[in-house]
Image (cartoon, rainbow, N blue to C red; front, side):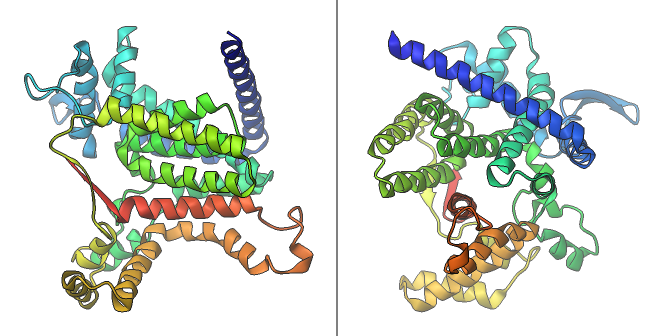
Length: 401
């Protein structure tokens, strides 16, 4: 009984803090016209990618439901899940009669189904309402993140700009090859507003950032566990940065001898992941996750439509097929990784300035005081955890179904 009351009290307290932070964000937008303009531009840019899909329209006298990009398949698939799969238990596969739905991250589709019970259209939820909710939530998380790092309007403005509009250097590849930059947002991996064709991915990114805020502030362990479960149900790829994120925080707890926090937050990640596996992924007999080192980065130097380096990729396959992992193997792998980091991180490479600057100055006596340094240890961990986990999630693992 007492535990339930404590949970209710902490939940109410958290909601009050959210209200306060939301008010601060609104006040910040009112005071800073540049941030307001930036958010407004970002909103229409991102929403324009997904809003037109799922809408009945007429083109050249031919009328029907319009879909843009990957939504012509992925969007229809997720709406089919939301409208068909959860009316029976066990859940059913929407495109194969008699087949059970298992081995799939259907969290968002289940949420849409719940909204459907109270009258919301699955089409409107997937293509209209949830994207707006995502933008508001993500903007709020970014604002809170910016204040955690630097309580500075200029920093907040730059953070919003680089998060919403930075891109890979894919446009350089496209321009040199084709004389234009069309389609560069998908080169070499999905970037920016193009992510709206994959709402599950965008929600997992926003929730991973929110999770890091919760961990940093050591919020209620039950809320942390709930967010872990939701992330695991949204996107299987998100499990890689999630696990690495927890691993770093647990190491920090060990270093500080905070054994109580270590135990609590270990359970907060292990138990939800087990529950998520049982709920979403168990019973999958036709797919899974397997190890494929440099699965994505090597495509950059292998694909003739990207930035092919025939000699490098030939050397890689020769060494890989030899089965010998030596210094040369590691050197060639590092060269491929550096190619990928440069092109994929693109404009976001500027974000590595602060931690690099910190590393260069950390031995300087007059900057040993944390309050006087340009970046805290937390910021240093944060940037590199995200960078490392992002790379791990795309060049070590592949998923198949």
